[in-house]
Image 1: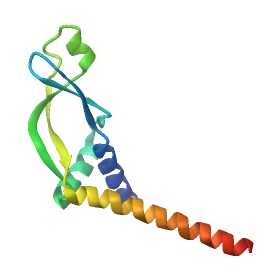
Image 2: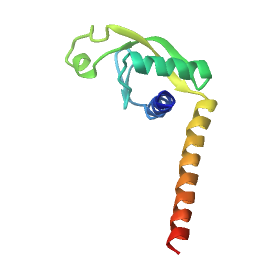
Image 3: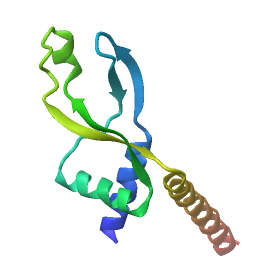
Image 4: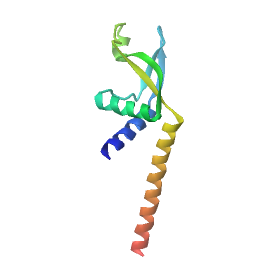
Length: 117
């Protein structure tokens, strides 16, 4: 059960990433709220890919630190990783999770009120 919670949390964190600005030359995307990458998160993202919740937007994109890039070091981007985007099924999963949480809150509040009365 904890693994499913972690997978959905990873999907939620992936949905919050956004492009802040584009640096030139090279049209480098600066992504705000990007997820840190490690083995567990990569496994969670691949599980989401397997389930059809995400898809690869761009494959083998250079990943690095913006501050190093802005200091003039053009070799700041050594790693290459894919960029993922949520599919309609992924957005539906996130929407459904929110609806369940709201309904649980409403029913819990109704039970509390009925117990007090």
